[in-house]
Length: 138
Image (cartoon, rainbow, N blue to C red):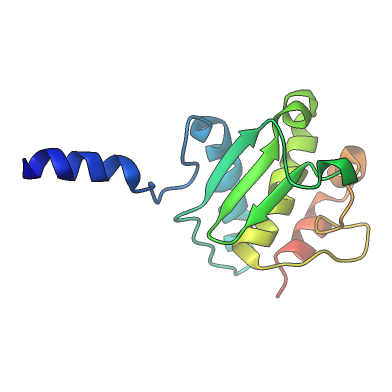
């Protein structure tokens, strides 16, 4: 009987690795690159426990919200936006949310990755290093 209880409890205990859930594979590269970019700028970032999900609805989406970070390292990204976004659009969205979850950053003045509006992909591509320097600054 004890093995059955332990097995049942294991399904109730969330995983602690990055990308919990069926969406794990598509976010791994973003998380790894985020950690590497931070390390290149002297920031040690531990994504352990980060959980990222694509969802149909996010809180306050009527106000233009397309991603949100909750305490405990839960990131929810609006699936309809993600599926239509360019690779750079996806990167800036997930970096913005990881900025909240992993760096404890608040929104700041635009233009930068922690701006409360979506950063233009071309602008980010042209000034990538500068945007990442600001994101990972203390």
